[in-house]
Amino acid sequence: MTSANMITTLAGAFIFPFLIRLCWGKMVDNWGAIGGWMAAGFIVGTAWCINHGVGLIVQSGDAWIDMAWAAGCGLFAASTASGDNIGKGLTNGFFAIVGGTIGGFILSCL
Image (cartoon, rainbow, N blue to C red; front, top):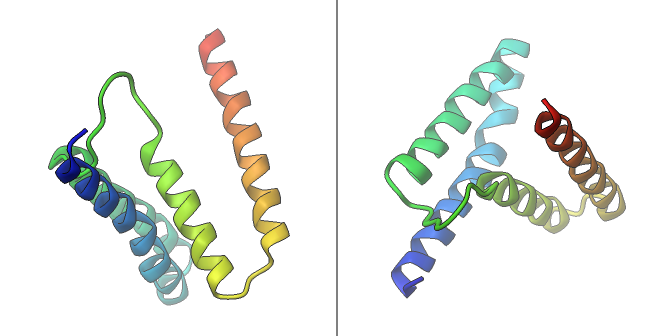
């Protein structure tokens, strides 16, 4: 991976949690539950198009959960910096990994 690829990948990985932190809560506050659904479509869809359609995140080989890792790490870092409970964040992260593993196992059995 070249240094330009590393920079674009870092920028792409930054954009997704930044948009989540910046927009998602405001959309839910303004429009309620439908705002959450709209945020899911707009933020995730736009970030996916930028990162994978345009190619901001460079990836070689098999599929990888790059945007999920970017969102998890970015939102954890932002929450930690804003003074939120680190223990609760680590617990949520652990159970997200366990849930993803179980879900992946179930899908691989189908």
